[in-house]
Length: 212
Image 1 (cartoon, rainbow, N blue to C red):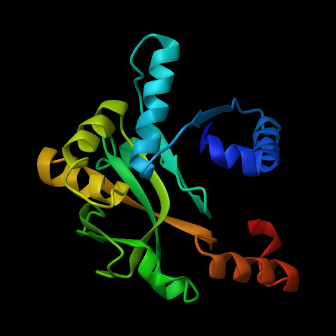
Image 2 (tube, rainbow, N blue to C red):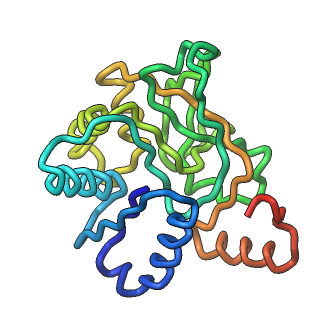
């Protein structure tokens, strides 16, 4: 597990990051904290983390990885039987939830996907409701190279650069395969209002204990 944070965030939230690192280590997982000076977007943050690791390791990184938003919580099932899902090998994925099941979310600060009958993503748009399926903040990349290709193509074409732009850019420019994977137990604290609602639910016991 790799946690990426700004130097400024570490100064203000260092104790919380240390607690998060300790919690991850208690699950017998390796964890590394990477601190960067500045970043203008989530994709840039991930790219800087990749560059840092390749510099330290003195070789390119290979293999797939998951980018996870820091302001959401959810469960999803990682497919481990590819023979039952022939559409999944060599595919990227986005985890999603449905608006119908999450009536209290702030709908206009989410990205939305459209899919075909095989659950392949055909479109992804930032902060515009084009379907009932919104990203919960988990993005699986089949390999580092696919991330880099989409990153450099979209880098200078968007004023606000989001991973949703990379998803659609990869589909449009490279015919990348992106699959939608459903999630459950979604919690959102992306805005102050969302955080206050979450804290209230925790206090009143409305949040399911098993989902924490």
